[in-house]
Image (cartoon, rainbow, N blue to C red; front, side, top):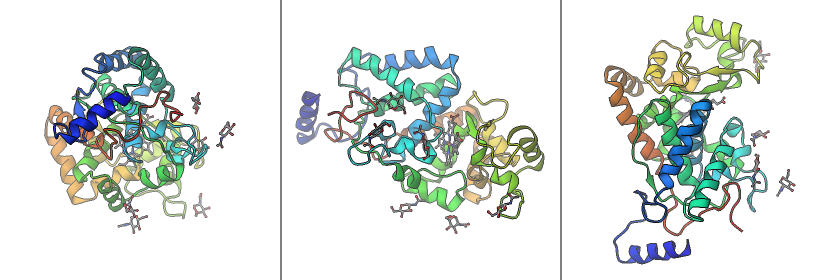
Length: 324
Ligand code: HEM
Ligand SMILES: *[C@@H]1O[C@H](CO)[C@@H](O)[C@H](O)[C@H]1NC(C)=O
Ligand SMILES: *[C@@H]1O[C@H](CO)[C@@H](O)[C@H](O)[C@H]1NC(C)=O
Ligand SMILES: *[C@@H]1O[C@H](CO)[C@@H](O)[C@H](O)[C@H]1NC(C)=O
Ligand SMILES: *[C@@H]1O[C@H](CO)[C@@H](O)[C@H](O)[C@H]1NC(C)=O
Ligand SMILES: *[C@@H]1O[C@H](CO)[C@@H](O)[C@H](O)[C@H]1NC(C)=O
Ligand SMILES: CC(=O)N[C@H]1CO[C@H](CO)[C@@H](O)[C@@H]1O
């Protein structure tokens, strides 16, 4: 581990590598790494399809706070005590920690101290997208794990389902992601589930006078009220974000948006800004393959947000704790 890091510094000095991620980073240090992740995902996710969505969301939440450095996995850090990112409200429903721990054990057995937890999340997210029928792409690796995880940062930096378009665009811009990335990456809501709390204000009390969100299709809102989120304070029911194809990666999220059936205000907002609406229409007019290609490019870009490479950070031995 130390060795690799000093070789890196040596190569940096002589200009043959940049402090950047690279495809096949583990090709010589742990040649089976990517295959181990892929086999594990392909073996287990079909039995627990909802985990695919959880792992993709985990990668997003990881990247938006201190970069893609597995800070979302930490249980305790010296500076934050137990108030790490995973205890923050946006992380309330992030799942899949045990899955990542299982993968880490396999990788530590194969090549101890080589593969970072941050890369494991990125690879597992990509392989999960493949399992749900979405695109595959080469994930650049070489991320290193962070030492710090602070709950209040997750609250401040992860977008909220109540955010308007201005806030969403600014939030993504803060991570060097543009409006196109916002529209494409929101497309991940073609799979997975949400708790009523993320949108029930739209059904019951949108502006504080017992009203509904007029931009939500009324038939859909009726259905959600009568069959799903039957009280304003429901905290247990879960709802598919893309009803009927929640385990399938496809374009239907965008079709639903135009039918005013985007579940969150943040989804719905994408249809009321001329730039984002034009992008949605372009995606729907193009082929699924076009969406897949574009989505993969945006995912790769998200996977590069503020990454630690070279000798910064560390390769954690246990994904839940900083090395001692
Ligand atoms: C644009 C801003 C975004 C907002 C405001 C947002 C918000 C949310 C919320 C509130 C949920 C439901 C969580 C719950 O109630 O359990 C959710 C689920 C999800 N989000 Fe997003 N999200 C955004 C962007 C993204 C991005 C960029 C990705 C990944 C590329 C993503 C992937 C997912 C997935 C896969 C789920 C389903 C999780 C599951 O089934 O466990 N989201 N999102
Ligand atoms: C981290 O916390 C989770 C529960 O959030 C627990 O299952 C896991 O065992 C903990 N890991 C360590 C190494 O403390
Ligand atoms: C973290 O939580 C554990 C178990 O709940 C507790 O024993 C420990 O004292 C806590 N550590 C800090 C730094 O708060
Ligand atoms: C968007 O939300 C922010 C933060 O809540 C608010 O300051 C701003 O006025 C809102 N913008 C619009 C156009 O509603
Ligand atoms: C964007 O970053 C600036 C500077 O750090 C911060 O003040 C602002 O709140 C951020 N905006 C969003 C929406 O996260
Ligand atoms: C709606 O929200 C307002 C302001 O938060 C609150 O005073 C009112 O009681 C709520 N009404 C309903 C029907 O929940
Ligand atoms: C898994 C986990 O740590 N969940 C926490 C998410 O955040 C809420 C509120 O901040 C905590 O009560 C949960 O324990």
